[in-house]
Image 1 (cartoon, chains in turn blue, yellow):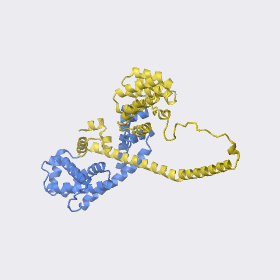
Image 2: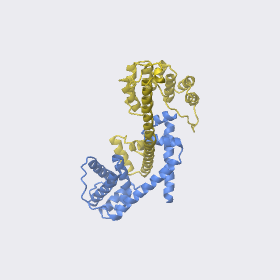
Image 3: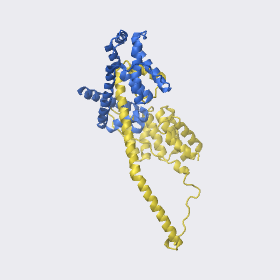
Image 4: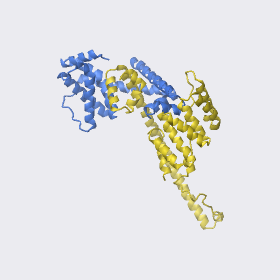
Length: 184
Length: 258
């Protein structure tokens, strides 16, 4: 991840018209923006469209030097995303009249989608091989929205043990994912 | 907001479940826009959540297919047989066959209509679920007592579980689960006054998970004691948590008010 001063330099390079810096920005924030929009809208299609809009809006503003404090690039991109999501949710999506995302930047974005699909497949494999109770804990936490205390009551554990096992299970998945993704 | 706070306060789960306040959500988003490690964890959990939701929907679909393909035709056949059987017995009665010579049947419970369950039915209790699990970390005495007592509980021997649970509660006053299951054992073995007292103590400990359940089972205890006002009050309190017992408590309250 870029440090704060690297963020500032990234913003400055975009302002100066460096197209490689724009690609870096897409790499850096594309997935984050997608996750943010998806969690807020639960609409995958809308999220895909809005990611493009947010990236374009951010790049154009950066090109024009509209970010005064360049160290706050992440907050700026986040704020841009929030505004466009709010417009979308209010049904007043005033689509910016920008050109389409440059072809090379769009490719970066779609490679993220391929990575997502791969991740989903690997998660499915990993969950199948997991201990039943660990899977139950994840199900109760992430789908049923139960708190560790509630899960503990139904499984006869303590809330602390539930937290630990949940953490262990998600770490295990993350490790396996990292291993498998790096092999491909 | 930093990585430590995020881990300590289950921020990742709460974010995915949309249970953060607007302010915390903003703060967390700003954090993961810059933090690679938290974002990687978030992506993993999001993929897990999607997969679990997907498999849940698949199971529901299979169940739906089962209902359509098996249960619906079976129900149709059963209804057909019932109609034929009713017609046949009416015909035999009409023609003075053996059915007509039987003594007339009486309605055993004229006061209760099939749509309004009796108080006894409403007070019926399903034991709160419990699954024994071997802990990896060493257990203290109280937990050993608890686990031993809960073996009786798992076998449906609630009275036998009570002494061990009382010991566990005495050894560890802070363990809400010990108190809760002690209350459940009193309830299931018909000791209503003790059940009421222990569930009240469970609620007083302020753990929302157990409080929600304790209110629900306390309502059951009141129903057994035929205290409808107390039962209604506790059901409403349980519903107020909007947690796992919400729909069951709502249904019970609805039937109670019939």
